[in-house]
Length: 199
Image (cartoon, helix red, strand yellow):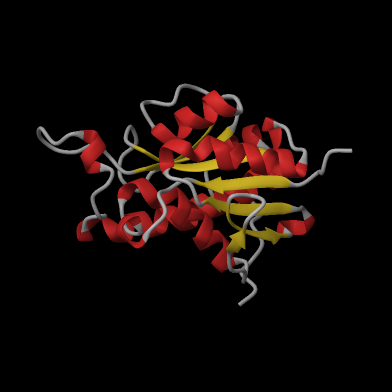
C-alpha cells in the first residue's frame, strides 16, 4: 500500500556559490520550515538529496532539497516519489517565481512552468499536476537576462521581504497538508492552523 505521507520539495542548486541566490528560495523555504519544526535536513542517498521526516499536526511529511542541479530536479523528485510510492497528489513543490513581486507567496496546482528549469524537468519526469508554493522574486529591471538574474544573490533591499516570504511559504505548506488547496487559498496564504515552533 502506498505511504500516506507528503513529500515537500524545495527547489534550488547545490553548492555554496548558489546558497543566497534568488533561484534557491524554494530550497530556503523548506530549510526554514524544518528549522521552525526543530528539525535539520541531512543527506539521504536513496532520495538523491537532503531530507528529514516531520510530523506537522500529526500528518507525515518528508521535507527534501534535491542534491541535483535545478535542471535535473525531476530525477530526485521521481526517485523520492518512487521510494515512498507516492502519487503527484502528495507532492508539494516550493519554488521561486519571476511573475510574482518580491516576497509575495501564492498557491497553485499544476499549470505551466513559466520557463522555470526545475519545474520543467519535474513536468517532463513525473508530470505537471503538482501542488506548488510560488515565492515571488520579481523580474529584473532593464535589459538583464532573467536566466542571469535568478542566479544573482538576493539584493540586500529584498532580503527582509524574502525572509518573511520564506516563513509564509512554510506556513502555506502546513496549511496545504492540513486542509488542502481550496481551503488554504480561501483562507489566505499562511493564515491556517500551522503548529507552533517547538523551540
